[in-house]
Image 1: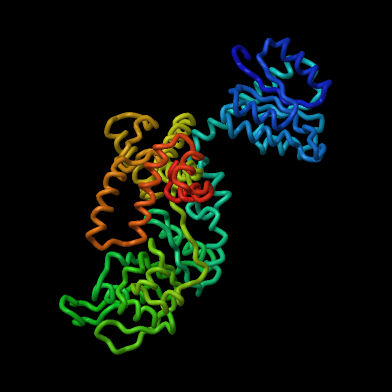
Image 2: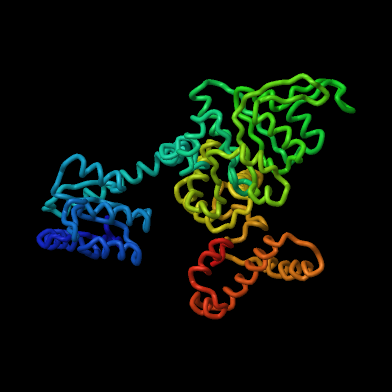
Length: 474
């Protein structure tokens, strides 16, 4: 069973160290021993192991109150996901055993161990339970999503912002501004607020409008409605989105693209709920919760005269930001699980692990939307080619370069942009950001260490680290 396998044995009691070491030697096992949590974690980081046998109560400066073997178990799972773990303790209380299994141990055995075959049986049972767990994971694609759905009942897209959204759903008249890059899930967040309200109130309207696709009279007509004959082509009367949203939610995406006259008319609705349709003098009324989204900083839009300060102030409420996927790389396994559960698709564990690892190496300029679209394309290509989905055949598009790689085109095109800016009007802040990014990219490539880089460009380490995070540079 243990041929060519390696065991890490963690124990701090002198008698148990001698006893278990003797049993392991009688089995002809290749094993290493550590007596502290820090030593065990270091071993798990530096060396590969097939098995872990750890006591749950390892003495620390704090004494025995906390079962510090749990820390070893969690570190083992994090560093070596395929390791088989057996926990031991002379304390057989149910809560102790439960804590070990919850932390990730596959089996628990009570000390003292007196026979070598007890260790073999313990690891055999642990391996069997681990295989059963992996098998159930393969057979039940929705099971991939269970852990995340328990933590975030309304979806991983919201993540830690879920509690704020729940508060917003409870305040039915509160407005909200959802900011974030394109594809970060702003509309999904609005739909989840609608879902929460429906669970409490029953079915209510949800009207979503992409303001970037409507301009001029079309925007006013679609939002507020119009009378028959109000303008050329108005062969029929239309009620408008605001009427349809009465009693529910109106979601306006990219609201900053609305013209100033339309913003002024919308402001009146927000103030007292009244409005007029195009071509009518009759006053209509609509009460709704307004949720808006923008890829722009609305405060800056106000400063530059493209957005009314009054409407901005009227919309402010429990606002929140949807971070880009590059700042949520640890959530990619959860998004993959969500995608697979929606497709009712199963992948074996090795394929799933390899896929998520590969996806975490890419930059996702289009964020969650791009991730899902690429996975859709991946499944289509696999179907057309008649092959099983695997990490190796995941398509690599031009904008999916590894996230830590500096694009050569960014440097050359950046130089061109800077030269053009001498003769043309450009957005100052954007131009300065582009220059800073290109400058730092080249500087990082020229220097072997961060300390050398900081000295060469006369920049404090803390400032450089902040800018590297801002531009996703390593």
